[in-house]
Length: 142
Image (cartoon, rainbow, N blue to C red; front, top):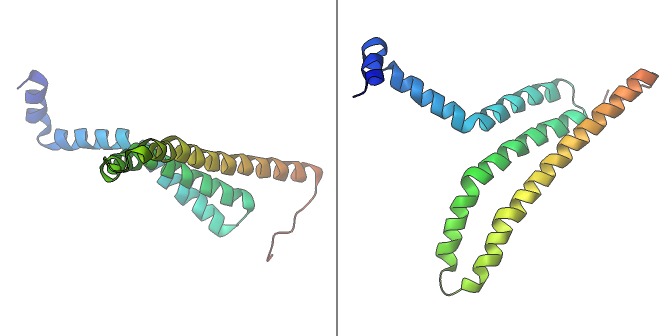
């Protein structure tokens, strides 16, 4: 046992294990924590006063979390499953399936996320322009 482990056990007890676990948990999953926090933020704002821009921000943030999970956990697992399923009998399908699974799906998720963020920025910019000119836009149902 090294000096740090001895010092930590003497001064912190078992708390250093918990602290280390929490540090690794946060560093490994920070995009998900960010996604959950922003989804709650935009969801509450969307609930109180729905606008198209807030819907776009909400779905853009949600797709950010989905893109992270897909790239980190889903795509590698599905890739291994494809290798098992396609095996030797359907080996000719292995390469096209991996192309669709990895770069094409990541591109589609990223493009949808970029579309929603771009649309939210565009709608926010138009809202800002309307407020400077003095044009009011009637909200549906209001």
